[in-house]
Length: 386
Image (cartoon, rainbow, N blue to C red; front, side):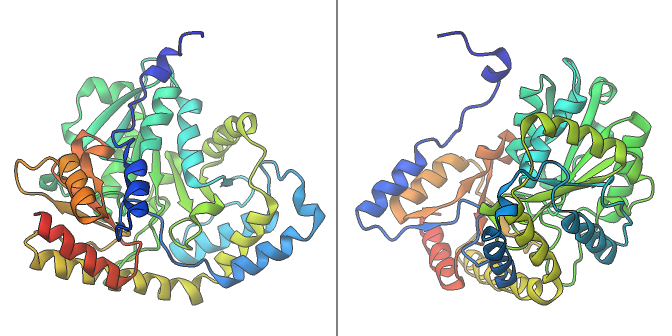
């Protein structure tokens, strides 16, 4: 067999590759397994989206290639929604691009902007698509630990001059996965100015913009003055509408940035299926009437899990965004060892912080993806292991 490409060999291995097999074995033995490891909620998509997709599937026209243009009505509805939600005006055909899930667009962006020796600044822990896209595009990742002392923000003033000089992309994600941190507006203003000054593309992953609590309303990076010059924002239907398996999202930003990403995608795919786009269009149109109830379900789950975890001795903060709890472990307790012990002894699966990067060591992530009663039961089991 030919030798694997060097860039492929730079990809990190999956640190918990045996966990799916362990889960299957536990279930086969009759263990009452509670899986809080994956951000894939058990809730249903909007009925209007399901019905629209079913109708679309019955029309042979929707079985053809959608290409990058896709469904014009969806582009127009995305632009209208961005205007209503954020006050951001977009040209639906030049500043919006449908994606096969936001992950796909995020992964492909480095292929448009990174040459060998160029740097992408990446939060650590962070979504693995940032790292994978950078490495396979031949770029150099610079991982920045997200730490409590910096409010889980990337400290721009501490970045080395050589890294900033070679940087072409900065990945940010707020509300954040996995830390559930949020970014103050003044920080986002600093980020935009930083990217403008240093000629860096700001890849802003806003997948959790609609899952927020206690009156907090996450902004779009495109609201920030000057952001249109440097920022490409990524949105997803996955978390907001419980449509993870549908694989659809979008990118929004300046025509030059959209055009670059679209050109890469034209060699990689032939667009989101029309049937899925029709479902997404219906989901967006039901946003105001449907999303608040869905978010309230996540809030109730958040509060239940926090209450029991605190009673069990964990110093867990109450997040204002995203669908996760980022739980600190006692000093000296390794996150992967804790997660493995928890799975084997108590039948609860969580995500160890180290699995999302070395910067996540000392924490584990709980996804609010099961009913409140199951979250309470899981939190009690977690407390037993502590």
